[in-house]
Length: 640
Image 1: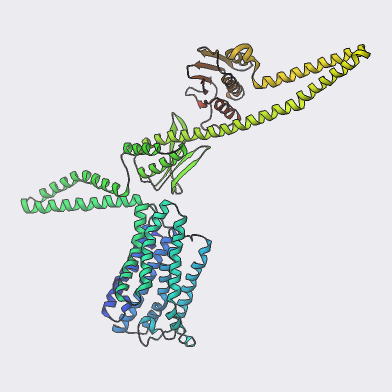
Image 2 (image 1 turned 45 degrees about the horizontal axis):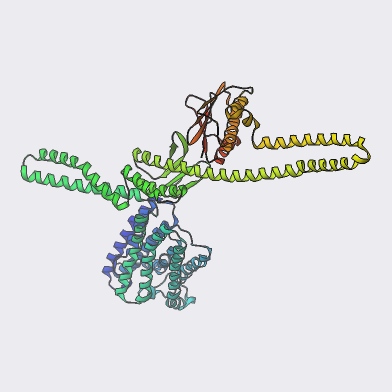
């Protein structure tokens, strides 16, 4: 596909130049004056972009327009030139091709390309009839001209004999030709309006891309509407037509529309380097030949050495100039500084990460960049392609996500520096997301617990107390007339009250373990650790007296869940529970010598429950694999 594109890029300018040369030999075809910029520039510009994005439909439409116009120009000029200098039996067939082939380029250029810029798709389904109108115009009009019995008006030649003319059509093709301009103009104006529609619905970057193309197309169509048959305005219009591909390339260069920034950067740097070093080498050789005479070989060696010495500093200067042109920062520390300043202006961690992703893409000159955070969000900037480069993001040895890059060719140092900053932001986003989920879970759990307590009180405790009240009333009524029957009633009241006390105790135990009140936090943990399984040691640093009740319950439930997981899954022989109290927080750690967590532990019920318990008090809970083997659960719970 790239080979075909470049073949057309070579053929079309050659055909345009040959067409211009033949036109100069026969002065009467006024419509073909000068070198045609459409055939000269469209295929070259399109091939340049197709080399990077060979499957983008719009680029092939642009390329085909230029190639078809080049063939038409060659057929039109060749017909006149051959008629004047070498007439033969095949000239009418070449002229027949020139009759209608232009209709497969002009409507495409002025009507279809604006509809499909920049991605080859219509702005919406309601614009389909405009596309169908252009296609109908192309097919129907070209068919009429191709079958016209007298087509001299189209070729500006009197007495042209159309080899495929149909006499029955009479003057219909000529009449259609006189009235075809208004619908062509109308469809062209609608094509421009489609650009306006796409512009209004687009984001800031796409708007800037559309502006380059829409501006040149608007001026071109405006000239076409007002120029009439003025040859001067016609020449200006051809120049404007040549500005269309230039405007598309400008959109590419300035806004990376098709992701070719890197290859342009390298082309400018090393192309300029070749020119500069070549000029320096040639100048030194010339000076050597004129100054030292017979020491030419020595002069050549000296020139080569000097050119080699200048190679690196010249390359650095050219690279800096190209980086300024394409807005690329290669100093990782400057890029990191810009990243930090940009992030400080963001409103929340997610917005900061999105901004940082864009800055990293800019700093590395990548076509696309994305940050994946496991279980939370994915932020994409640009085009990732099919196989992006993956860079792990680690926060204090813990993997938090990946940085995906497309088209980056920077060294390892900038990547390493920027990845550290992104890892901090990714960790913050993950914590924020976990905190939001925990709050939602806490709110849901609290509502469920309230519903459970209400149900227990309504369905269990309420009826029991009602039954006791009714039994006491019955005993009071019998006390005067039948005292002996009161004793069984009172016995039944005692049984019901005992059962009710048990139900109330179960409700209270569900809210706060009684061992905390009887033995204290450390004693309650020791008691729970005495269950069958690995040996559990409890070590406390600092006094645990006077802890907030919510903190005590959270610590007990977290350690209870952690020890349950150790007994079920870890295969450990020993476990250490350590509690360290400071003025600000209580740190709880549960370490075992078991098999440890997998590299990417699933978010199971146990880990989620522990994180939620910690979040209820405003703290955090993390789980990680220990370097020496086993698992470590660390919870930090604030005391104020």
